[in-house]
Image (cartoon, rainbow, N blue to C red; front, top):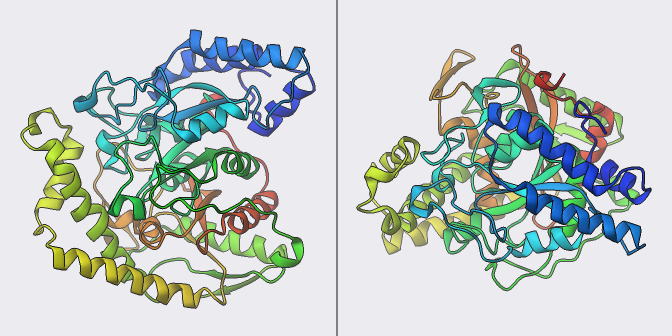
Length: 472
């Protein structure tokens, strides 16, 4: 394996099992790549070569003694710095937690280790994860490997940049309003937002609870759907610490079942326009899925605008109320991006008991409405966002003659956080500037396996992963 090659996690694990690669060799290659490329990207904020090499030597010893090897044995994995990794910083990009070191692994991290993964370290986030770009006062901004003048997205921007550029073979992000899917779309990789509770959010900061538990999840990010599936299967499972957890087992989707999956496709939501290249990416994905034998029909569910508005009631208003006691009186220590988020939440009256109850009931009602429509269409195909990766600091864009504001550009992700639907992103095209564009595959709750199967077929038709030009 050379610096210029980007093998998938599956390929790395297979070569280690075949003794064609050693875990130590793999670890050193990734550490070398981090040393060379991370200064340009600022993706990793805490990685310790001695920790990495110690894990790799242990993995190599297991291979040499013929031990049973897990599906990720020796594979270098990164973790978003809002998830506990023992011995590493878990600061969530805020000075208010500066220097905080996790004492133990989050359950999902422990499961990755049990599967043989080598944990490289943790990656950058915006402060308290409240942005669709990655910048903070602790570590600064993360750059997009496709264009260093643009953001890698947020809040899992460090993860997306690290995986896209080959600093890690895969990783874990979190998503309350597109924070896995938007960075994946911006950086040309795959990401999965699962159903709340399918992968335990235990050990994540801010803690999953109340409205955050309904909309926020943790999930895998990788360069291929096969890697996404493997990581999902390793991390999934019940845990007492996740209030949405349910004992839903991993299942195999039979080909006969997939033949009956109807797919609804829509290019925009009728409110927020998308770029011409985004429309083309959705059309191309629809055509490729039709070639695979799926019945793909144009259809846009009724209720998406209600879902967008209700999402802000949970993420913006209720989220702002949850964070306010932590932030009150410490405004001078906050990043400009987080202060901007506060200005949006404080511009609207806070929830009363009655308004929060109305939002909760409204959420259940619109969820039922859209699920009834998805009895015919088990899968939705749509854009991930209105635009590709934007330049650092931008807040509005001209699309199809209309001004698209910052919060509106990601509504294509926000619906499915409010509804609790699993959704995967598959890279499917490029903008005129050469920036990646991903499409979104969405399923009914607890049907991640169906989503991943459709995504895998789409990826197979599309062709191999394309690396950023900076690696050539």
